[in-house]
Image (cartoon, rainbow, N blue to C red; front, side):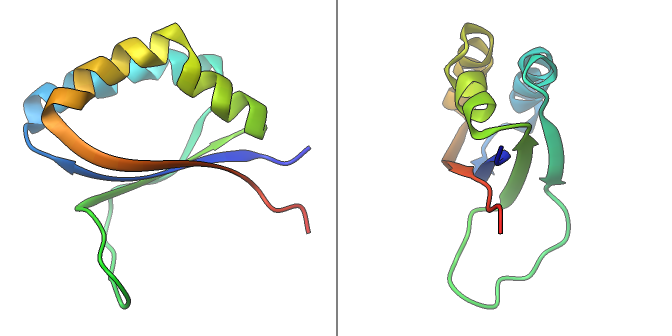
Length: 97
């Protein structure tokens, strides 16, 4: 079964309020087996343009990645993030080559 991934690019306008989103997303991420592969960090942009923060989260399956996003617990956390950030999120199935 292919793993699932969230790939997010985010600009944060208020880091202190954003921290409440980080605290609130911990429970749904644990419930759905999420593992952070990238959470900010040093980077270069040799092509194109991206937002200030990049996050990559791995889930045991694509279905788990979707279910986490759609869960009530994650949507409650997301409601804390939305007013203080702008982002792009892709939920994608991993490659089983």
